[in-house]
Structures are given as C-alpha cells and as structure tokens.
Image 1 (cartoon, rainbow, N blue to C red):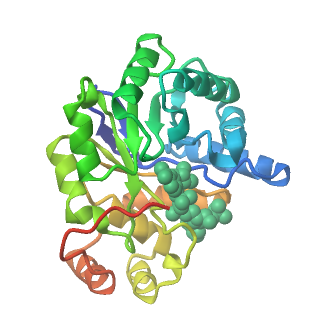
Image 2 (cartoon, rainbow, N blue to C red):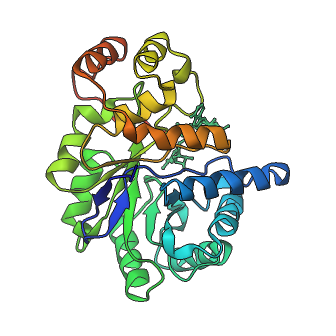
Amino acid sequence: MKIRTVTLPDGERVPVLGQGTWRMGENTRTHEDEIAALRLGIELGMTLIDTAEMYGEGGAEEVVADAIENQRDRVFVVSKVYPHNASRTELPKACERSLKRLRIDAIDLYLLHWRERSTRLVEAVEAFEKLRAAGKIKRWGVSNFDVDDMKELLDIENGFACSANQVLYNLEDREIESGLLQWSQKHEIPIMAYSPVGHGRGLLENATLKKIAKRHDATPSQIALAWVLRQPRVIAIPKASNEKHVGDNARSIEIKLTGEDLADLDQEFPPPKSRKSLPML
Ligand SMILES: NC(=O)c1ccc[n+]([C@@H]2O[C@H](COP(=O)([O-])OP(=O)(O)OC[C@H]3O[C@@H](n4cnc5c(N)ncnc54)[C@H](OP(=O)(O)O)[C@@H]3O)[C@@H](O)[C@H]2O)c1
C-alpha cells in the first residue's frame, strides 16, 4: 500500500510515516542493524528520515549517510540544530558539519531542535534563510514550539516560511490537542509527531491498546501509529532499529480505527480538558 502524503507549505509532499533515529549511532556494534532497519523502512515507503546533530553527537547522521547511500534522491532528510548553535555565526558551521556527516549537498528540512531562553529567533530565522538562499538547506522549521512560540515566530520577518513543527504526540501525551494542533492546522503548518509509539516506555504494553490491536489483527504499535495519523497534516516518525518493528510500523497505514476504537482509546487516554503546555522529551 502506498503511504499517503502531507503537503508542506512550499508544495513539497512527504510521506505521513517516516523514521526517527534517536539512540542510533551510539554504538558500533548495532551500526549494521540500524542501517538495515532504515533501508527496509525506505523500501516500505517510509522515506522521510529524521535525525539531529545531537543524536549520538553526530553518530546518527553518519548512520543515515550509510543508509541512504546510492538512494539519496528517494529520501527526504530532516536534521536538527542545537539551540546554542542557532546563531548568525554558528548555524552555518553546524549545518556544514551535518552535511559532511550526512554526505549530502543539502538538508531537505532543517529544524531548530528546541528553544532556549537565550535563543534569538530573529537571528535564527535570518541564518536559516541565508542557508536556504545558499542551497545548503531546502527549507527550515522548528521543534518543541508551543502556540506562543509559533505566534512569535510568525510575527518575525520570513517566520511564515516555517515548514513544520516537530513535537511530542502520542496516546499518553495529548497536550497538543489543547491548542497547538488546531492552531497549526489553521495556519497550515504540518506537525511532525515524535515518540509516536511512546519512546519505548511501556505504552505498547497497555491492555486497552492490546485489546484494540486484537480487533484489527494488528500490533499495539500499529494502533498507536494509526491513532496519531488519524489527524490531518500530521506526520509520525517512529524510531525502530529492529526490522520486525519497521515492518510492523509500515503496515499501520492500512489500519482504519473505528468510532468504537477511538472511544475506547479516549477513555483509557483522556484528551486534555483545559489548556496544557507542551512537554518535551
Ligand atoms: N524533536 C525532538 O525533541 C525529539 C524528541 C524525541 C524524539 N524525536 C524524534 O522522533 C523519533 C521517534 O521518537 P522516539 O525515538 O523518542 O520514540 P518512539 O519512536 O515512540 O519509540 C522508539 C522505541 O519504540 C520501539 N519500537 C518502535 N517500533 C516498535 C514496534 N513496532 N514494536 C515494538 N517496539 C517498537 C523502538 O525499539 P527498537 O529500536 O528496538 O526497534 C524504540 O525502543 C526519534 O527517534 C527522533 O528522531 C525528536
């Protein structure tokens, strides 16, 4: 089955289901398994790969480089810059280091990983735009930005060019449903949901999730992903370094949750009743 796409603000289309890489590139013993998992994911249509200079302090970007070798054109590469590097002088250097580790000429989407008190948004946007003009990145975006940060961003010159906001979203972490999700949909800025299967913290052991999985002859991770992907303009980026998990995740796009499933999930994982601020992992 072909994975449906989300259209970014500049018209580029990316699959709704991609692949994360946090915790990859930390250990040479698992290098080959990680490459094999990412390659299988690409074969199965999960051609958006998310990484960051932070992951394995560059090690994950090197794993991505090996996984996409000879097939760079099929893959949409997302990387992220540390907030302390998001300045006029440091951003171009950080980008060059990432490009070198990724062994590519341009990053498809370059995100500010999170915002710190000292982050000067105007300066970061200016630096992103310069990189875009120089062809080093195709587009830029942000991560872990709540509604107030997004509003501030859109008030800055060229802030509207933000292509996506990558945030925590899964059955146990529904905070974005209290404001950010709706705001983003209204402003047509895609949400990239991170930790969509709960970051390996036990969500997949939940009894209700298991019960619903049984109804669909599916796995809990497929239900967790189908639930995230029920929302329009939302991309999910599960991380799996195990090929069985990758295959499982790819099949989540075939699952259509019923009204009964959604009601059961709402009961087990209630949606926020009032405004909740955005947590970050
Ligand atoms: N912007 C940010 O601040 C931020 C923060 C967190 C994450 N991220 C991005 O989002 C990606 C995903 O988030 P995440 O890594 O935190 O959590 P996640 O994708 O929700 O969970 C990853 C964990 O779930 C396991 N898993 C994956 N598929 C599975 C399946 N089908 N069955 C059973 N277990 C499965 C993985 O195991 P195996 O590896 O053994 O397969 C791994 O332990 C990250 O890798 C990263 O790229 C961004």
